[in-house]
Length: 134
Image (cartoon, rainbow, N blue to C red; front, side, top):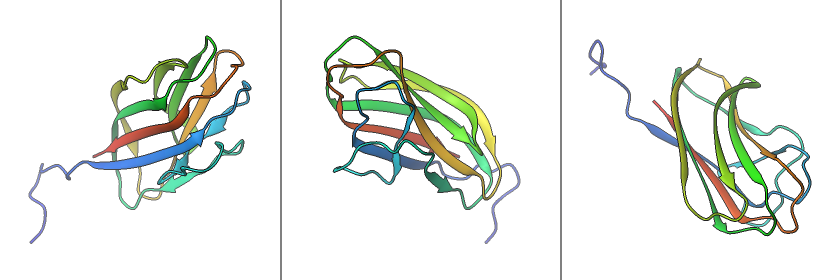
């Protein structure tokens, strides 16, 4: 049976994560599906979406706080273009959420870039971002 006109697809969660994001200000990328043993990649990595839809939220969290004053910004990119961003303090373990509505066509390349406002003494650990895709 097909989808009814106007019926929305069930939201999906696209998960990205790494063990740590490094201490420098070099932009990094979280691993699609998560990587609990490595450092975030310096080059873009992501996943292709299998259908068209909308990115409606990003939730970011550090399991273990880092050391040093800096803001860490998690940005969802769609085909290399910034879509939604959320900022988290390096020393925070609280979930941060940003919402919006950004179209992603079928086959779009979705990634999560991590930027730091300053170098830090120690990276937060187990850094995760969940992207809602409807």
